[in-house]
Image 1 (cartoon, rainbow, N blue to C red):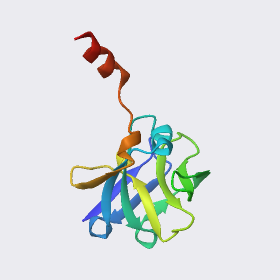
Image 2: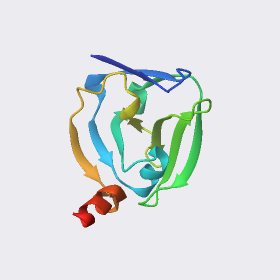
Image 3: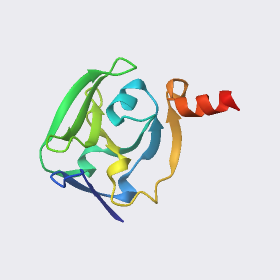
Image 4: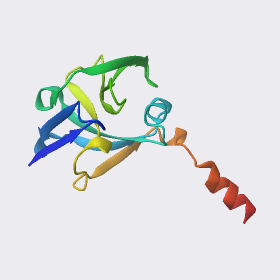
Length: 130
């Protein structure tokens, strides 16, 4: 089944076959928290050659939590994160599930870096106050 998605402004679009997705995960590393602005990123592992992207992504490079070089691709117009990859594994892309047109079919198989996951302060405040 063909899946599609786009950035917020529609400048970047993509498509792939659902059957080509290797797996889906929640990543709670600090880098994903910073890039999404929340406690995690939901990512799809997909072979690079199976993901078709239209539009020019702007890339930001950083050192990942495990020492790899992570390149994060986003729309230069609206800033939506679209995908990332490790320079050491160029054959595999990490597609941001948050910008899928339909994500209801996803089956999350694991969570990475769960010890660094964000705990919402309002929950802690309410919990302490009883």
